[in-house]
Image 1 (tube, protein in one colour):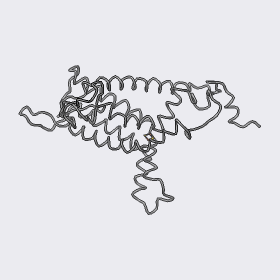
Image 2 (cartoon, rainbow, N blue to C red):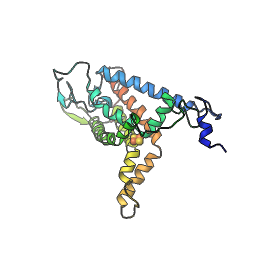
Image 3 (cartoon, rainbow, N blue to C red):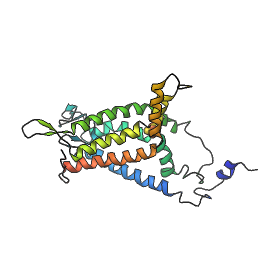
Image 4 (tube, protein in one colour):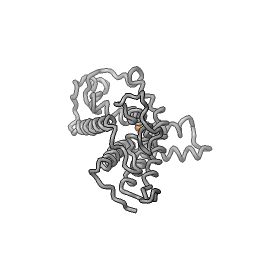
Length: 264
Ligand code: FES
């Protein structure tokens, strides 16, 4: 009898006995991630239109330097090349978190270099080395990016809070809710749904234990992370699309193209 894996390994690249549209998902991922990468790179290098009043786009948060009330350090250091934007420095962390995410790895391995193109579809190489050697073993750094991603949730939540304060016309601030406030707040909600459903976090809160009895708090935390983790792919896409839309929204306000309607 021929082992099941042997017949699959003999398939040529892209050959399969599947008769469904197996190529649709990798193609959708390829298009979706490509759009995001092009947009994000454009915005990171643009180094402009990243704030509007109390709103700060997540692509530039935290704003480490600049002539802005949002900036941690006022002004631009003389020694810094002008083409370096604050976003380039901070986006390494959320980008690294997404790039090494267990879900995205599976998705872009299929979509960008067809390894494999899809389940039960022939691939280029006939051996599976996994992620146990260079370069892919580096993906294990994901668990460390998680700590930064959690810190970013607090920073972005603080931005959403600042988006609730508007000029009162007398030199002070007054509480309010604009469409932008809701956009910034939803960004935190969606990013939290994605980050707090991370596989590494699930291991962090529920790993190292043989049984949960006697660790009710960790059991509860593990249940919560597991609940989000079950829909990790959806959270990944919703949060990715929304963070892009949040940046677009703030940038369009800053350019004077869109109007931010005050709800409260
Ligand atoms: S596995 Fe996706 S964010 Fe950690």
